[in-house]
Length: 170
Image (cartoon, rainbow, N blue to C red; front, side, top):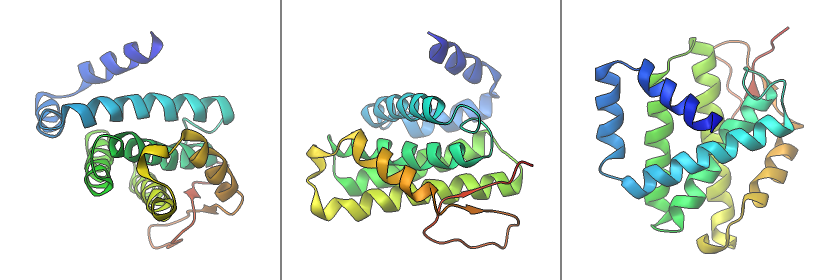
């Protein structure tokens, strides 16, 4: 119930232009949109349970949540379509999220970077596992392991290709 309240309040706070922008992406892809919404709830719930202090901030839990979110979107959408279409939709919907709910530039860079880490990780696993057999656990444990090597993003010029990034909130 809490999730739907958050979703409703978020939509209510958006301008008409932003709502139209969102609809232009989700209406042509209703199944992908529903699966992405489900993936969002799943990733948020898991991140909150595992990293209650940093999942909703700019800390390491947020890095985990964004990467996991993308893995889940692609995993669910790949079960009904091709992985290529799922990745394309995932990129569009997660980029749109950053556009509709803007952050400070460094926060946006962090989120987009971690989204890419999630997409890349899914594609890294794809050749070895049929898309119908992906499970949530494949991503959770691996991303937690990637967190051990996560880097602190300090400025817009930092480039930590292949690593999760987070902001130092001290």
